[in-house]
Length: 136
Image (cartoon, rainbow, N blue to C red):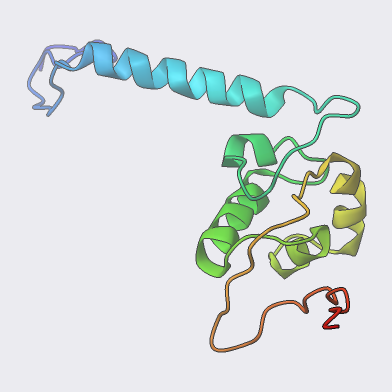
């Protein structure tokens, strides 16, 4: 039996290796992943805020105490249950506890007026009292 070199298909063994025709697509995907990894690795700056209702997973991953699995869980929770009306709403996400919330709170930008959908017939948050009407 003739010797084979590592990584080659020479010799008596059959292999299913085929050259890739989509080299440009593979390079583009590689660049996209490198950019995403660079974003994830960039530390969050002082005063920088991230909106958990809009940010993609790679941006959420930059929050203190949040890794890729929890970032993914945040995105899934907002898609499944609706937006986060206040920072405390992030506690509904598996992987976010009170200590983690306090670590990331200074970096959260939750808009003051988030429309919270009615889910399962439950009422939304209470409305602010209206000013009295002067009917006379």
